[in-house]
Length: 114
Length: 110
Image 1 (tube, one colour):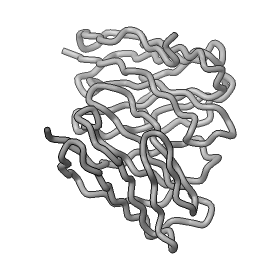
Image 2 (cartoon, chains in turn purple, orange; image 1 turned 90 degrees about the horizontal axis):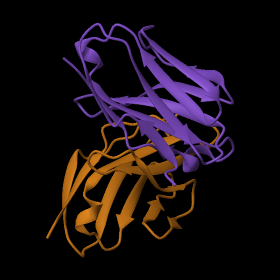
Image 3 (cartoon, rainbow over the protein chains, first blue to last red; image 1 turned 180 degrees about the vertical axis):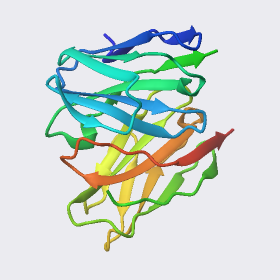
Image 4 (cartoon, rainbow over the protein chains, first blue to last red; image 1 turned 45 degrees about the vertical axis):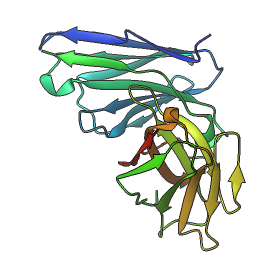
């Protein structure tokens, strides 16, 4: 009964490959997010979807493309992976009207590009 | 969002209270103070939030100064499992964006 689940937990891949990370939440939240935490440990927001509509799109290379087939799922596809993409990617969800209280994070996907 | 300033690290003895300060001198009237923590290799976890009044829940207490320019998160009886990075975040309650700074790395020692 995990609230926000991400798959895979670990991903090791070669430069130039294309990979996807999946996220699902069973909390009934209407907003989902992708965050990136690099080696310096800073957590930075990348994207946010509210009811399948993109509402936050930070300065992220267009090799990163989020997709939200429904409000319970937000996937992240990365094309032409580069060494600098190595990081931990966290998915999160929240419910409109609950502000930051309702943020629930997944356990992260550690991406290593070699 | 208003910026926050936190000490980079602090130690605490197990069983003692841990007091984590946060300065947010440019906070606006409609901005809340939120605290999250991130235990090693896990996603951030909500702890507590407040606007003006002091708040307490099962995890911690939040003390906000009268001028709202600073706050203190209190972990009443720190345990080894409280070792984590603690983030103080200030933002408007209805805003979707939750921005994290560097936080305070708290190490609880036996």
